[in-house]
Amino acid sequence: MAILDGLIVGVVSLLVGALAIHIGAKLVLQKEPAFGNAVTAAAVGALVYALFGFISAIPAIGPVLLLLLWIGVVNWRYPGGWLRAAGIGFAAWLAAIVLLWILSVANLVEVSALGIPGV
Image 1 (cartoon, helix red, strand yellow):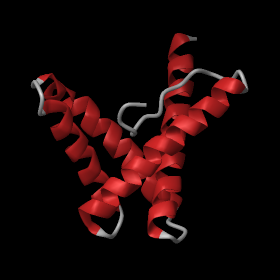
Image 2 (tube, one colour):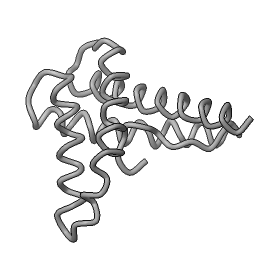
Image 3 (cartoon, one colour):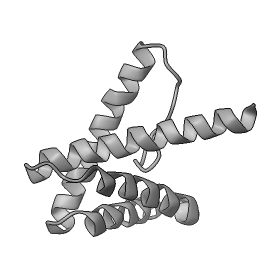
Image 4 (cartoon, one colour):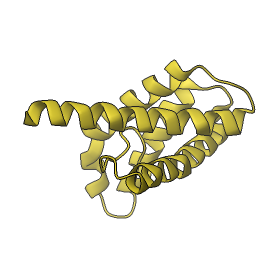
């Protein structure tokens, strides 16, 4: 049962992360982006964090480097360059906080958002 619980939490977390990225991209790009790009960005972003999380242990610059890697993933999936990717990331971070708060108020599972740094 623990494996199934972990799988459910992982899928819900990925979907929250993808929805947050989708909302961020929609706000920044001012158009309706494909949801598949958000799912890919969330999954690859989570993978980048898992593979390169050790970088965050580098004093002062580690967390910044890890954040830049994640913004690079967003930049890879969406048009507009690094500045828009950073905007999408910031909007996604805010959206993830709101989505997780709604899930918490509704007494649904306590989840984090895979693919969104710091959430």
